[in-house]
Length: 77
Image (cartoon, rainbow, N blue to C red):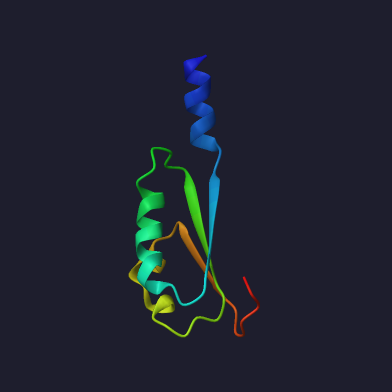
């Protein structure tokens, strides 16, 4: 039974969604917190609600498991 749980955990991907507006100063830490979890088969989806700070320039967006989507105008995400 333990082997089944291990195999299942390797195949099931967990998506973590983070909505943000002008929170670049906290976003890096939030993404690093997600990375430190025991479960490693993850993707992190960041929804940027037309931020005007440095959010789009964060280096974590270069990682393949972090997906970044930006709205051109604020929508109240």
